[in-house]
Amino acid sequence: MFTLRTVEDTLRIRAYLDEHPVRRAVVVGGGFIGLEMAENLVHAGVHTTLLQRGAQVLPPLDADMAAEIHAYLRGQGVELRLGARVSGFSPQGDGLAVELEGGERFPADLVLLGIGVAPDTELARRAGLALGVKGAISVDGQMRTSAPDVYAVGDAVEVRHFVTGAKSHIALAGPANKQGRIAADHICGRRSAYTGALGTSVLKLFDLTAASTGLNEKQARAAGVAYDKVVTYSASHASYYPGARNMTVKTLFDPASGRILGAQIVGFDGVDKRMDVLAAAIRAGLTAEQLTELDLAYAPPYGSAKDPVNMAGYVIENVRAGLVEQHHWDAVAELPADGSVILLDVRTPGEVRKQGLLRSDALHIPLDELRGRLGELDKGKKIYVNCYSGLRSYLACRILSQHGFRCSNLSGGWRFWSYNATDRAHDAAPTHLCGVPTGKD
Image (cartoon, rainbow, N blue to C red):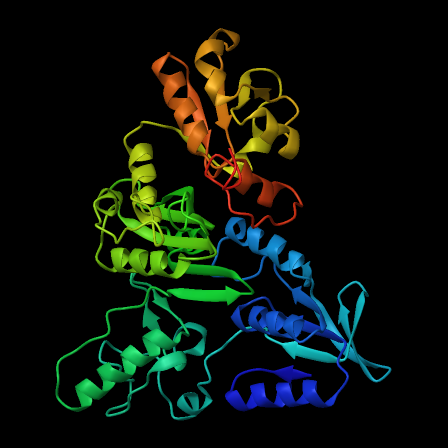
């Protein structure tokens, strides 16, 4: 049984794998350490089970963004068990058995515990320093503790969240290094102050990348921050140039001002650079309208003329300006089934045959046929429209609105809904936003 905190811990785990016939491993915890260890164990040829106590892995993401990661992990050979509460461990043969509440047991030749991080502040507590959130050391903007001439930085300290101003514990290397410089500046008589952290993070998981910055929905609700959200689906670079990969972008914003509050991205190429732009945008207090105006580097191998960051801004502005009303994946099941509303699917017939409808009572009219078939729709009923990604359904909503219909667009489209509402396999095949595989008509 191992924990992983230091480089020496890593070497011990590697040595154990080299020296023992490890066939089965259990990783407890689905945070950064647990996920990275699960990947490396799979690469080492070990059957790996990941047990996560909560309903999702990677807590910096919202559950709806983590759903794609769940499908991807299973596709990579990880046996993922969510809602798995570990109650104990016991010897079993030459190894261990990990026991869950309810009696289920998982045999293992190796167990790795990655069950969370807490600040190591026992020395500070014994010294009488003031402690704050999660027992982290309270410091001011110059990283001074409550004791004269004593400074603290890094994973052990309490910081201010840049968006909410709330005291937080953010254990990341970037903030830690900045805090170290500020403490040194103050000791040497230079003026500088730490103004807070966004919690910007990125994770490589096999070929997938997941990143986040600022507030997620859980944090926004806990802080009492008013927010709205959009889910967009963008290619890493121009889709007509070979090698484009898709990414799902979730952006939180202030509905009154349009100011960007947080972002999450799950995808492949180019996720990190978009997250860096969004983190800078939040730090600068930019609004969605200002996102649309950013001059970002474009050439077909690297991006699109309208970058995914620009696109998030455009979609937010469409929502704020009232050009389109949106609903989210979790609202689909709650829509009335008594005929009082219309669920309209505007994907192609081939997509519907392959992927199915959101609900059996949905009406299918491909976007290209919509103008000629408006007579099949009842203007007295609100229409809830979906496509694969949310792009064609937005176009459909514009057509319908201009003909006097009331309608709402499914944010993120069938693709986002399906990862959350069904137990679908992950599909990493590059596609255009219309759902057609790249390189095909």
